[in-house]
Image (cartoon, rainbow, N blue to C red):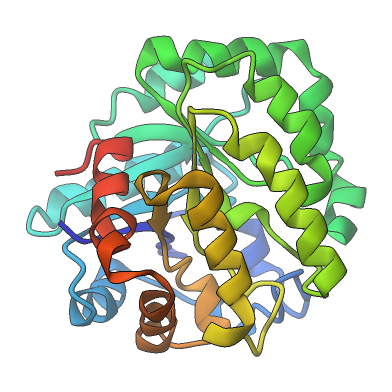
Length: 290
């Protein structure tokens, strides 16, 4: 089963997304204006099916009400049983009511894990301070508790935080972790990629961490297969194909490439012997999507 392991959907009339309503505000991945509109399953699956995908993993995307977002995604999945879709929802693991949040999320059969972003981009992180999560003992305690619930954790961060994050994740090895966007290698200079690869090793050495080949256009708008080849080669080498999975990050990455170009570029970079794992099997076992 071929699975897109990282994408988003949104209906602006059903769920409030503050960042999608903030017109004229550039983001680290570019000008969001072209995607500040409804992006529904029909549009996504039209592209995904054309590339042979048969199922997908929806990732939370900054709604004002995370439970409402998760409930809406569940309703979309329920209304479209011909398209297998599971989801990773948001939960603030440091909140006093985090356990209640998780209980509510687990009432939804499509929920497989949670994402709480640790790092997006240097400029935005300087404002949000989300990296402070790593110093919060409740974050670690709840991260450890996800395993008991059968939930995974989607990890988004920057290379500068990988060593510190790995030390935290090493204390929660029963929890399966999916590293989003190859760890966000935002500095594409030779020196920047060398630093990213070295820092990445702290996470790849942990057996409970898998890696997503996704989001590579966010820090390189004019990327192509040749320019991201070192990134793909590094994650396949460090994690092995059985711990790597491909995700479109659509519609965010549609700002820089259409779905066909995106997936065909990724496909050319993954050796034929590894395609089954990277384009399906890893996501299938990680997220329990069959």
